[in-house]
Length: 463
Image (tube, rainbow, N blue to C red; front, top):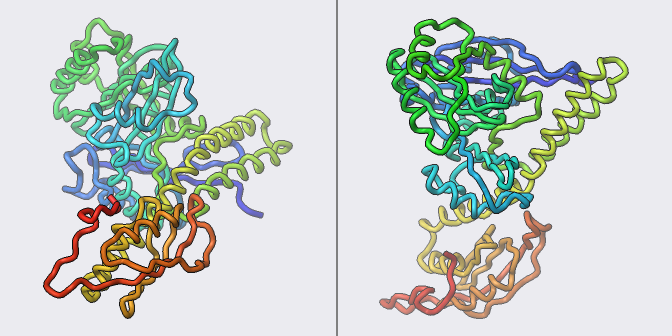
């Protein structure tokens, strides 16, 4: 009988150390399994705040071997706000829209983060507040997500969610999510400041605080920089151990604000976050298999079925909570189908183009010229999978959503004549891309005379 349990490996960098624990899902729900703290390699921490992915993988390797973590295990990463973060945006005109407009979102983020929307991995979450809509964007540079994926792949593991620490505290706020509070999270010479309200992250930041006096000074700056945000009604200090000196400095820095402590561990907060069906950033794979998302959805639906099937033998309320959590995660993952398919098409086009360009250097001059004419003629919706050149006759095979646009583009290229289309074999590609096969005659340029470029001849080339 197949196992009805699932294990998730979670890594959480905390300054020079790495917290590692497992979350185990059984018929009774999610729970914390094993937990350990290991040191990161000396000198491998970037700016002391955000460890490099390779450093995290190096510290994780002995834990994986010692615990016997099976290959293919999914890894979730809980990160401080050092690379990436969370941005809250107010949309006063789009409360009724079902989806966030990407062009509008790109413009809104332009002045808030140093990356374009196409260069980040992100997740949006919306909520209504009166006559406006609040949009919370969790983001990370795409290059960093790729580095995490590659580092874990070398250990035989799979990158899953990327979650920020502030998200864990926001979902289960110390004040029940009914007030605005600033959660202060110090560790190893660094401090995170999370402004939370209504179970959302308003803003989050990190600062180097080598001494408690530096922490107090930074807290004053954080409070002064709130500007349009409501002042917190409470300051909450996280940590299981009592920190009397830090508490005293915080009270002196903000004497008019209530002070509280939160001793819940990060591992317990993560389990609550996961059980509630929440998710962080799920990076779209660089080279996704066609059914990558389908497998995730299949697991979620199979998990729901397994939990419901065991309802007669286990506590009904616990099973109902677990089924609701799985269904919530399934609903959040389903819209990412479109992103996967678009990414798959882009990768296929880029790979085919790169392979063809790699062969240009060793090809004869006329072969290079004919191939460049093909690239100039291709529209954005087409790519080449095979190119051959023999006796001034070129054969081009590829895929695209508009074959006639490919033929028209080739006819406008200098040196191209007698363009014919031949029957092509092959099934539809992503987004209904059709296979095409085009043959044309190439006229070599006269010796000592350069051929006019495509754009000079009035041709429309690929931009």
